[in-house]
Length: 347
Image 1 (tube, rainbow, N blue to C red):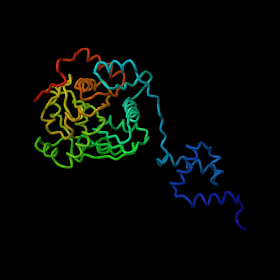
Image 2 (image 1 turned 60 degrees about the horizontal axis):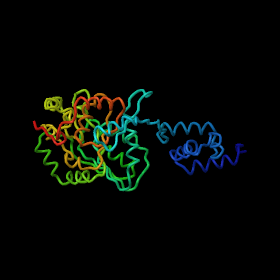
Image 3 (image 1 turned 180 degrees about the horizontal axis):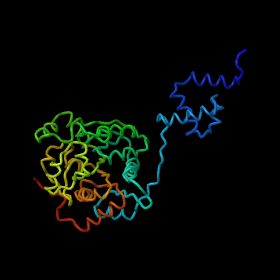
């Protein structure tokens, strides 16, 4: 005599097992639970498995990454600070995260705020040029994945050879394009090379020049802002620069870089040996992109944020309220000099 049991359940169980691979089965169960809103008893009855098996499958789906739970925390903004920043620096937009009651690191939320702005303004067939770094990584992480056809993400500054590939331009371009439903164009070159002649040769090389031409034609650029003190320098951390390179920049009056271009605290462009060895979109073509959004947060970034906004290279900013308050305080201490935006300093 065969084993007794519920024939309907046995048939459903056979069909479910035979018709799905393990991962497909886990995804189906997870979809019924998280998307369709069925409870475990209802799922068990529908597919012919026990409730305990369904429970284990839901747990396994989460552990394997088949299910990703995303908590979309509110992103409150400080409207008054936004208006002050726009007026002070003649910006297109200022995205200022309001932080009362927010504890812990703020970069992820500022990145999410930048991502929200990016997705709300993008149209189909838009080209976005991007740099690299942790702020850009936070922005890419913050994208919801709502896709627009035909978007293109172009790497505008070298990054090959970084010690942290998860924040280099090619990886970020790939991930951003995947979320936006477009394609990515990588710049296959290091950010900083050994000598200026090599940098110039790379910039003339056909494949590099072609990518930079695409970046120059972008409707929007999204960049991070790098500091030049060793304790905060992404260039040093990623192995692109040495401490003596940073010291040279600081001695020349540089407080950081915007898209690879070294700036003084008042926004003047400073040409140094380090900048001459950098591979990326030149300053005049970066300035010509209609919207250049910088993403940066933290008191340690106040000087370079002020520099980038004064320079005119950047015309939109995503940061938090405490950082922007400090930037505006610095702006009051250092009023705009005549013709400051066009100044360059060579060392």
